[in-house]
Length: 51
Length: 492
Image (cartoon, rainbow over all chains, first blue to last red; front, side, top):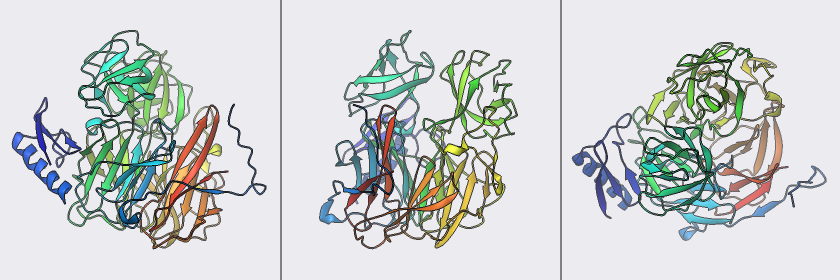
């Protein structure tokens, strides 16, 4: 399954399959992700999708 | 020719219709604890949407117009699907996980988005809530498919939309809370973009089970108060000296300016006096004596109840944050298996008088006849107890007596509300009861006509309205326990 990391106006987001994420999903409010965080979170979602 | 319902009780009995069953692989449908159904009961979106969630990757959309099913993408949600999983349908689309979108450009008839829309959005309602064009309401007549989708709207606006335009579309979204033992999940599926977006679970317990219900106070469901401001407003108030409101009866509702100065603005109501609303965020344009307004359910809030606990949580969509509520009076008993949670937005005898001062419910002085204010909750867990949560006062009123309260609910009971009535199916017993807010009593309603399998926790019923002009007919649908059957009955 393809992981796509994209730039947002504040940080980075990811898209894995039909899961799309612009902000840090584990923090309160709309916290932008760094590139590394987006990669880590995308891998977590990829693993869940492939279970 | 207009549709007319001439059915009469006793003369006509309720007749169940077999709908297209959901024949998932191996017919393994409705066997997963926590599986639930939700629908567009307020008819806010085209094509009569309902959704059935049977697992994190077994999620289906039911098109009631066509009586057909479509599988949706894998949610990728955190948590473990089990008893306690629950969801809610919202008419507002949630592209990127939020209701309010910002345009990148526009003309008087087009709005350019930064979203990748994959469904044609014809007949979808749209409204502009801030920026250039605020107050505009119209219908999307066409949308381009793919990235940076362009929405064509009708009628044309007086001025061109632009990159300051903030808008909401009624294309629909499915909100999915997933249970778990070491982590929970919360994600939203946006119909227009066909994507899932994870939302915050910060502030929620990491273990959640037994039973769950997610409840919204939907702004477009109905208006509960209305008028035209009498002016002399500040940046955070709206006055109407013709009213005699109870202090804070409108707290946590939203006010929407529908005409005159400041049209299109929506603000949460923080508090109110007898004649003045105080809003939680300053007006961009302060209303004046030309400003007409409506008071509605707060689109920004959702409530999560269950987990065999008294504690409840509130999610704010616009900030992506959960709050653990601290009601003035705690609920007297936990929300157990098969409990209910229904926001009551309609009941014919609960209409407010013209000065909008609510009357107390006979025999329950702490409950006011005020629609949109309460979440009714039968306790479940083998109890027939009824508690109500007061959204405006942030308190519980527990152990309310009601008529004909023989039946207790437990694991696998389903509850869906419509027009001031809560339809409850007691586990897999086939008995469907109806709590009527107006008469404050539980009534017999009908029975599920087919044998059902093992009881499975989760909401199995939903409603779909058929609207033809002023005529509205409502169908009650139910999925069978441990069975793929979907059946419906016209509510008469």
